[in-house]
View 1 (cartoon, protein in one colour):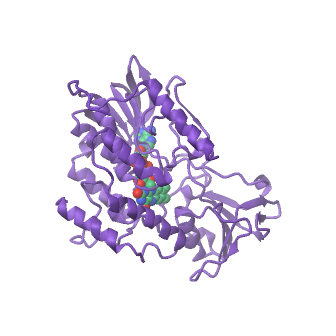
View 2 (cartoon, rainbow, N blue to C red):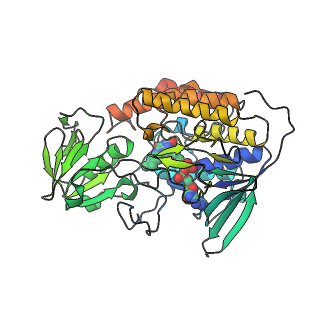
View 3 (tube, helix red, strand yellow):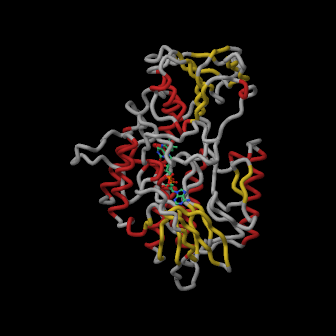
Length: 448
Ligand code: FAD
């Protein structure tokens, strides 16, 4: 898209959330000349990375009256990607060797990611834009502006008018629970990974973990340290799968999907194996959730597809006043937030323009048709997988910022290959020193 010729406009913008997405969005908006208020219901920046030892009271998070715990981080969590490819482009996530309290590993613990985000907020004076312990409870369009109702911890409610709202509320808090035929009568304990913290409650139990990607692979191994047996149900495996991964876990098995659950405590897998289990841990992902958003029916969520979003950022009928940063999950996350937020900031200032509403809708419909042609369900709409880099480079061109670096994309691709092939060791043994060297040379050349 060619730059617009109009003078640059400064808008008053609300950002919802001070996690990685909200922080970089606030920075990019301010850099573009906008005034920014970030609403954050927690007491500090960092979002998902603020570990809460106490999970929600309802282990499946189904009770609508429960008090919500935002973070899904478990105690043993280390990043699932190398640190170099996680950081923002001009603030690399490199080891802080001068500080002994920091974790210098290539795949550091969750505490190191929180410390990095705190460093980032400090380096760019971002906290001065944040209103902590202030929850957004309603957002609605009013006369071409946006009314934002917020509530402080003292229950004081306040309405304010903004030119635009950027939603950065995270999407790993509202669990998706996979349905198992017969589960209503199954007598054991059930928990979603959102509420998993430590393995201790599973001591000597037979546990079934559903899901075998990042969290499933980690949590099953964590539980296997104390449980009698752990059985992983993996949708990605052939139906006859029944295998024991290599040591050190002699009590861990991988199966295909679960077929049924029964009143006598048994779980039957599609490979025909029957296991009498004490607990099921669902590592089955999350749902998009915007309880504060009232768009007069312009937007809805169907099977985890947010209808409708142009390039996962702008709802055509409400753009550019309403936008979303950070929706596609997995892969390059922080840099995706950075590139999306540069796009939002530059469209709001008028430096770049969006296509017409009709053209945006045409693009969205064509993306739905592509999914249909591949027989992929609606819930795959915001999963970018292999096309993430192409997607980010497209946005980068749209708003005149650099493409994703070659090494960053390749580290993600090879990192995920290692995660799948060597879930036990991928964080401590790797074969991409060449990419790591390219990354550090890049940081040195840019004097970062
Ligand atoms: P969050 O970090 O969730 O921030 C959202 C913020 O919005 C929160 O602070 C929340 O309090 C606030 N908020 C929500 N609703 C409101 C409201 N109504 N009013 C005010 N404030 C509100 N990514 C990686 O790159 N590497 C990894 O290794 C990695 N590991 C992960 C492990 C797990 C278990 C999970 C679940 C995700 C992981 N991710 C990882 C993805 C991770 O979620 C993103 O990297 C990123 O941290 C998400 O940032 P965010 O700002 O979008 O959301």
